[in-house]
Image: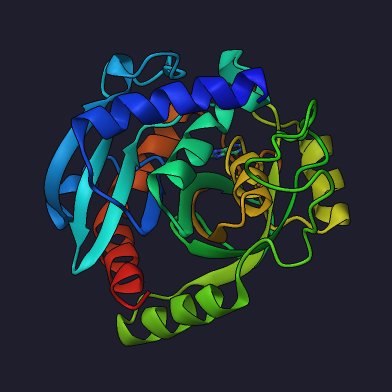
Length: 273
Ligand code: HPA
């Protein structure tokens, strides 16, 4: 057994002592979705800080926790807060929560985030369904000894974002009358925003939006046989496209403004899963 698997198993054993709840869906909340709990019937909460070996965010303070409960009738585990690679954790630790949720029972992972828009047809405040990703600028979370308890050494990444789940997202967006764009998400290491030259390069490479999370989590999830979907809130246009300098405050403000629509969309999608 790999050392990392033992660590994840230890987290799992702790969670199982607290709750027998078996989620079918895992939802990772990005910026602006922090208050999602009001849309679910929470059965149990586990603060990350209580779980032995669990990576703790240096950004969001003590707020990070798992919420177990029902979204509509769907049993789910919601991650309020996530760790980012830029905080200094290894990629293996950044994706530990995804693997832990796998052991807890999830079959579907729903990723959300805030990102910078690169596609000139986008504007701040848009939602983008992620159809594919570019993770070539960050190390793979699968680097190192393969954890065979989760998956194979060389996993296929042809359909990282599940085509059927994408269709559910399209239908929900139509029914809820919330427009959703589509595109390719590119992950950088962060924590600095990109330079305008980098954004031009990312555009040439086929990226529609850029952010500092998500792609690594999607890879770990696919490795473990989890079906994945994702939606990004375009909180700002990327550097050089935006007329103003970028700040975390702008990211947070736009995400907060769009929170109500984002919550409605996410809830509608999960109800159809
Ligand atoms: N770049 C990278 N990450 C981000 C951005 C951005 O412009 N906006 C929100 N997260």
